[in-house]
Length: 139
Image (cartoon, rainbow, N blue to C red; front, top):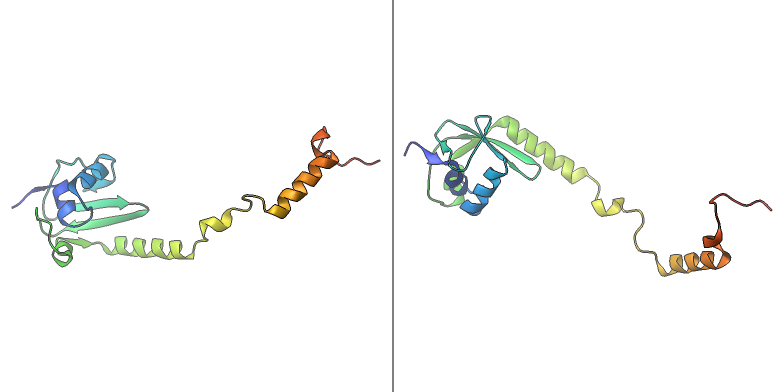
């Protein structure tokens, strides 16, 4: 076997769980072969450089072997070699993700507590809604 469809190879190399998922990702432009956006029917050969983007992680791979059968993970990992730049970028992204703040902590104000709701109700009774300006009245 000297050539194989890119969607079959991505499935056999265990980048995607099904061929249809691989085809969808290729259709969205998330897979490149030798720097060019690929189509699902594009034929791949040994020695090609494949770039895949899954989420915020981009992997650059060199194709070492071809297979159209999905096998165990060690066999699938023998089909490609990830470039050192890609590995370094992936590790850097993982460190940044680990050190980033929890997104939920950035929410400063959510639903009011019972105490906050009572304070709002008290402010409305005083005439908070009757004011025509937000400035302080000096009387």
